[in-house]
Length: 429
Image (cartoon, rainbow, N blue to C red; front, side, top):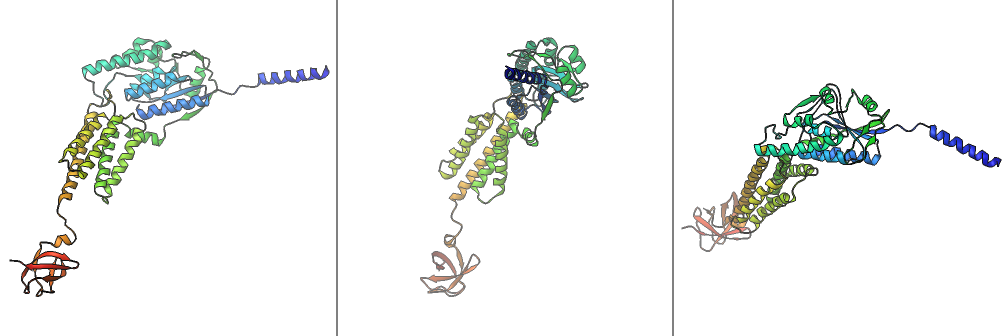
């Protein structure tokens, strides 16, 4: 019995020590979203939240400082936040930062909305990416669509709909104090430690998921920011620029294939093509558009190889322009001139490719300009008497010459054939 009593005492002591040992501090992932909202930033947020889920952090903080961006990418980020397995906190910081336009939607989509002193959020009226108002029909359609999106993220969390809608209908923007008074945000915090302190013990209302009580006091955190490569890709990853780079890449590579050794068109075309493919790795291009562009390139090649009287060149031009138009799905908030600029570039590239094809075709049909055939039919002066032998001067060189009839020195002769290194001539009458 003594042996069993000792074991029970040891077990009780171990359980007591285990129960009283401090739990590890909660962990958080802080995501810096401080660029325009586009396909690259949407992909960055999605990857970061997947990393947070894989590493089982307690919650995610998105530090927001953006003037807005594309509606499609905003929807992607909103979808990512709503489907996140870990709570997501939106935090507009540092002082002077803003969550304007698309940034306001992202802030409202977060499970907890917070702002630092000296920040603002709102002004979410949809406009074109060129900053101009949308056409009447598109404006009404887009406003209704964005209003429904905003209501779907603010209502389940108990935030008031009316002041949130004014950010769309009246382009209203709120300071952190005004946003707090209107219950659009839950927390005003100077920095991350104060934010973690105010988050601790808060019950978070999640859309489509059970409520969660946050434990954030003394939380440790890691920061994830966009790399230089991500930022560079963000510059070129607009559908318009990616489409133009792809078209220029096609033109450069085609010019190099038609004129091997030109070098510069091939180098520039290869660079443009790689940049376009790099941008398309995060953009959703239309495979129909890519297929039409490649089909157009094939038609231009066939114009040179087959006698189509220009029909392949015409078909290639049409396929190139249609491919440029269909390369990316239409974005109602894209710049008005973006699609037509890409289409215009496609038409210009089609004309260049057609001109190159027709030029190559005309060269193929020209008479031979090199070799022995070049000497046939030329008229020159006999440098010496010519019969069984003699000499003539042709194309900057002296040639041995023969003639069926005697030719006097200085007499005009015509080359009728070539025999090895000698020419056969006859008197020119």
